[in-house]
Length: 96
Image (tube, rainbow, N blue to C red; front, side, top):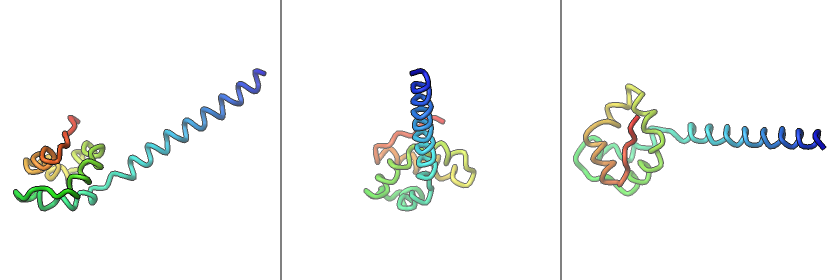
């Protein structure tokens, strides 16, 4: 009976580990700054964000801290216009 429990535990541990790895991989794969290209007009001018921009912004919210660490993206993500766009879309910016 102990061998069955140990084998079952090992299989369940493997399944949980693989599930967690899959979630991490999908989260990393989903972070793509190009997804925010529909927000470029709102980020760089005073034009209001489109519905597509707001949708993409909400989907990319888990990636904001990653974008802030990237010197090429930080200036856009942390700009006053980006903060205004996020507020207009109802997206709260995380504290990183």
